[in-house]
Structure formats: structure tokens, C-alpha cells
Image (cartoon, rainbow, N blue to C red; front, side, top):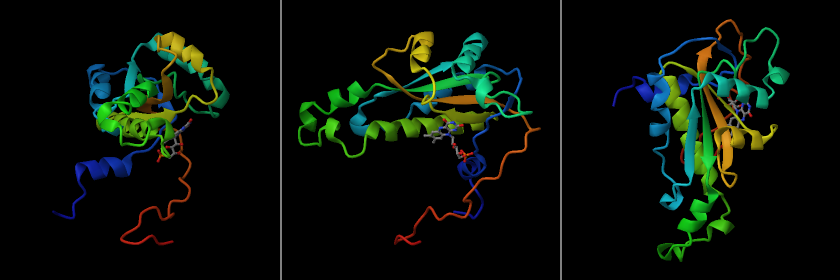
Length: 201
Ligand SMILES: Cc1cc2nc3c(=O)[nH]c(=O)nc-3n(C[C@H](O)[C@H](O)[C@H](O)COP(=O)(O)O)c2cc1C
């Protein structure tokens, strides 16, 4: 072991959510395999209830930006975020897979998935999210994440033919950062979030 920062440490150190992209062209090959590798996640009980849907279709991306009411949150002088994305990745949850898996005979002593204190499907979705962000950054693009809390989810389901019993956990964006935008400084930069041996304030 050396004291040098590793490739992954570097990627993690520099990762940030970027919400303003410039118009850009790109080699589709660079983003085509993101979902294939991002889905390589551990899932509770190997339930495999997380899926990823991606799009690189400019027309669909434009429609998504309208569904998200991009104009309403675009800040002055910023170039758009969603509509300038080169690719979008939707994290999909098929919760039923977890319940199916946890009703199998080898899981009869496990806590019923409908009574979990922690809904592990969101833990698994978070792992896929992180993989997506890092894989996109590794290809040299900027990334962002957006929840669907303030939009009409049904429209996204319809646009991509996503079954209505799936839940869309969120959307990852990939694009080229607009470097003319001054990003606001991160808050709480000194907040203690890791603990060694004992919890300490
Ligand atoms: C579960 C989750 C939900 C988020 N939802 C949104 C969102 O709806 N809109 C948005 O602009 N950013 C969203 N973000 C991005 C966070 O605001 C962002 O990660 C945070 O500001 C930290 O910035 P950093 O990722 O650059 O370190 C979300 C992030 C996570 C992990």
C-alpha cells in the first residue's frame, strides 16, 4: 500500500452533481455500457428487483425535460440540465421481486420483506445509482441525479413503456458540464461523517 490516491479514490474525491450542461456531441459507445455495469450490484437476498432503463434519443430527452418542467428550475444564465443531457438513466424498482424472493422456502426464517425496518430495495437502488454516477464520470462526463417527486410520474412510465407496478426511484443524467457556471460552494464541508472505532462528535 502506498500513500498515493488510487484511481477510485480520485474518482470519488472529484465526483459532484452537475446541473448545467452545454450542448455537445458524443460517441454513443462511451455511454452504451453504463447500465450493463451499473446493474452489477448486490441485492438483498439476491432478489434482483432493481433494473435500469437508459435513453440516448434526443427527442425523448427533450420530452423528459418538458415533463420535469425544466424551465421552472433553470437558473438565470445557466444552460439547461436535462434537455442538454446526452443520456438519461432511470433506476427502476420492481418491489414484487423482493417479496417473491423472501417468500421462498429458504427464506422462511428471515424477516418478512413486507416488515423490513429498512426497505432494502432502496439500499440496492442506491448502489446502482452510485455505480451509474462513477461509471459516467469515468467516461469523462458530468452527472446529476433527480427524483420524480414533483412531476407527473405516469408520463415517464408512458413515454418509456415502463410497467406501472414498477417504481421509478430516480433519474441519472449524463452530459458535458457548462464550465461558465460558477457552482455554489458546498455547505457543511467540515461536518464529521465518519467514525473510527467509536462514534464521536
Ligand atoms: C437520493 C437523492 C435524491 C436527490 N434528488 C435530487 C433532486 O431531486 N434534484 C437535484 O437537483 N438533486 C438531487 N440530488 C442530488 C443532491 O442534491 C446532491 O447529490 C447533493 O447536493 C450533494 O452534491 P454532490 O453530489 O455534488 O456531492 C439527489 C441526491 C440523492 C442521493
